[in-house]
Image 1 (tube, rainbow, N blue to C red):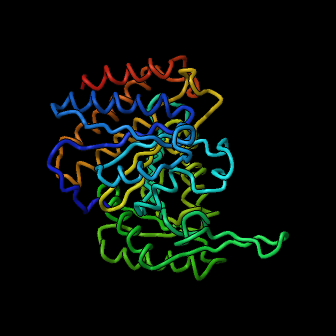
Image 2: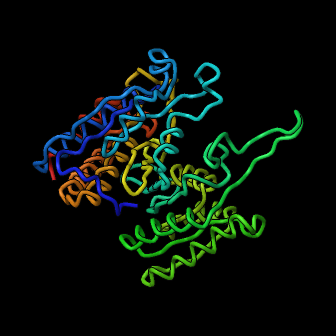
Image 3: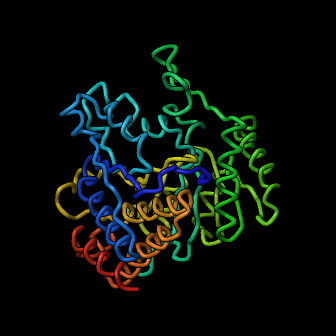
Length: 365
């Protein structure tokens, strides 16, 4: 991941897909913070390209994931995707791939990168946690991602449900390289998470291939752990871990756990990436119960957008984009440390007040 090139020397063109629920508030907040950060380092603004997706797209186009949206994304460098509330979609859309799932599959966004780091001033179970979970995003035991056509769940009789888990050497190799390259930029330690004592063929293959790839990175220490033990280790000593690489379902569960341990899912950022495309997508959901009330925490979406800028900085060889990302992270940390936080973190700030405070701090080092 990150070795490709956008091939476009002009301004980055970034899709803006607000999604459902609080996406209509937190995605514009992230856009405004990105614009401010680019201005602070004297870079031109991103060329934003709004595109329909989710419930609004159902109303207008009869589908949550219009084909013309997917076609348009192919011509963009990156995109920001808001959360979706697919449980509220009418049938048959509830039974189909979610908008995010359809995009991940269409563009082979094989790496889901989810950091978990406690922010200063936020009460956290693990206040010194600073790790990244690298989740293989295309295979494993999630039925909506592991088949060429259809899904990997089926019922031979009304009383029997079956699921197919898929693990291939090629997918293991590329996610392992992503994890080891990331570790080289951090504290140089990778932990491979599996369940090879029970799923010896599938997750055993994942473990063994990741360890094989580790030989190409002699400066990185490697260990491994069963997923159930890893959950306990995160609770007890989450600060001891650096980069964790694992398959799809395990990565989903562990990253939600790590997000809560480090403070809140409201601060849990993530990107989904291939070698040539990246999508910023907060780890949390659409929170329809607070949608439209200016109460949502935009931190995760803003920090996801910063990760998107880091990725673009690498593939476009534009370090100033990385500097803008650092501005965003610093501004968020200083805002939170000052006590300006939303209700989920025990504060009184609205979505817009928090965003305005971050933007003001983006311009101050």
